[in-house]
Length: 195
Image (tube, rainbow, N blue to C red):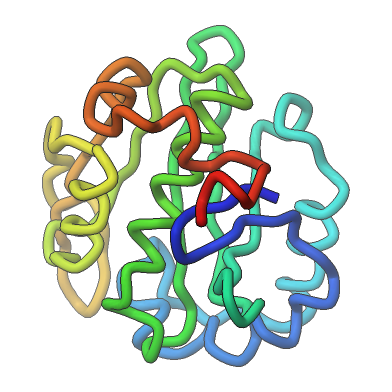
């Protein structure tokens, strides 16, 4: 487990499926994802089986559950995908499933912790993401965590009846360390560092 101020990140478990299905197919959750098409429980089960049995260097992906540190409530998931050992780079993704948990700082905290994992555990040099330019809440979250805007994929995604631009953002390991001087403890597996 890796700890932040508000969240802890842990391995995904098959028992997370019920919580995932509660909110995963709602409009509010899916509207900013690459695909607004709902996923069946069977598809989510297969995905969960993959992420619970894979290792980052073999699969090129690391997916962790986000839990509220105090209550233990499942909040969503965070991932590093397309992990490149050659380039020491990965693509970041996050989903806080229940809209009631949006705007409470969980996403920013989980993002910082996952960046810490990427840089300190996996030894990555850079982490990037793409998000809809209209996803203002997510962009604020990413910027607070240390991501910088680096470009635009113009009219790259067809969603809600129109083509939309994708914002490209990234963060480099040494920049993250400068932005978060105590970053050696942000995601520490030792909860005492996060009290």
